[in-house]
Image 1 (cartoon, helix red, strand yellow):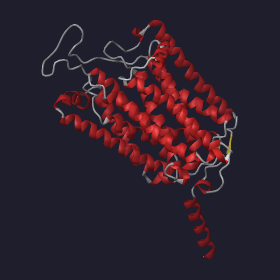
Image 2 (cartoon, helix red, strand yellow):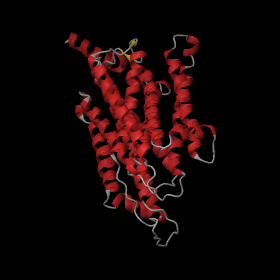
Image 3 (tube, helix red, strand yellow):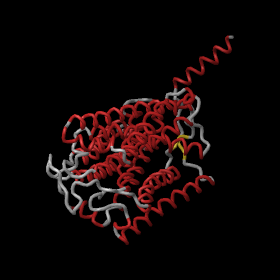
Image 4 (tube, rainbow, N blue to C red):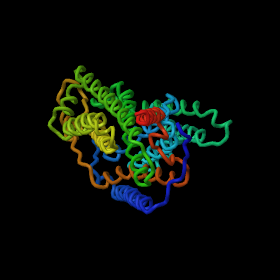
Length: 415
């Protein structure tokens, strides 16, 4: 690999236009949070039965994706894959930005954001939510340390680069395990209460995070007109295909396990074959749009010579991921609680009924602002910190492609 030179992002017209658009979306999210706070949850689609709404869908997706975004840096540091090493700085800062965007949407949806102070000062360690407070704060601390070891010019600091990267990799696995355990340990809901949620969320983080990272990487380099090699993007695209397949495998095992257990068969029929929005989002959103089509696109012949298939596939993975998280969070709450197994329960308090939910516009805006905040932090960071290599051309980052090209040149000269 040639020596990689990092530089600040150029302040062109497109840069400031992007900042304005992202800032407007983030500002709209704050206004939506204020509107819901002022008028109460009556203006949302949430009820006493559906207490986690659309903002939670976006927030959980971003929290899971943040872990996967950091995986790009881990591939270069922990697994010593040379082409990914120049992406380490951008991966680290973007991971923190995505987690910040997800937590912002989550906190502003609590109804009483000030109550977060109580959660941060009084801990109930019987609750997985209390554990996650430590995991989130620890993630920021560990990734900042990892970024510092990457960017420092002192040898005494850089010598700990691999150790810091390994710690960050282990922490991200623990973080995603904690997020998956929120659902895996929630025994009251028939759609949850399954240990496989922890490893399933780890698999999902690989695909969600890499897809989000590729979208941002391609967009940033196209907007700034910096060299970006098709070979690097194709390599990452094939890796995305592997992650998508792994995520689908764990989701399939989760549903097959639920079908095997009699206590979960009702919710499985409701979610997968109920002819409702959840079954549509699962089969059309996650399976078709988020799995099959992207998998075919990243391994197609056109992906070897163009970034467009990988970019579109990444967008589809994000859409499919949001569909799956919607099915898990909203669908899991929509199915009625089983208070007395084997008995039919009905009352004026909605027991035994399918709980309806229609997301309101403010909820969607607040959730979408999480993406805008993540992108906004990333774009601002690239302006003040040297995070982006001046060139990610294949000849600069992939030595295998360099050797191959040199061989071709020598063969032409010999001929």
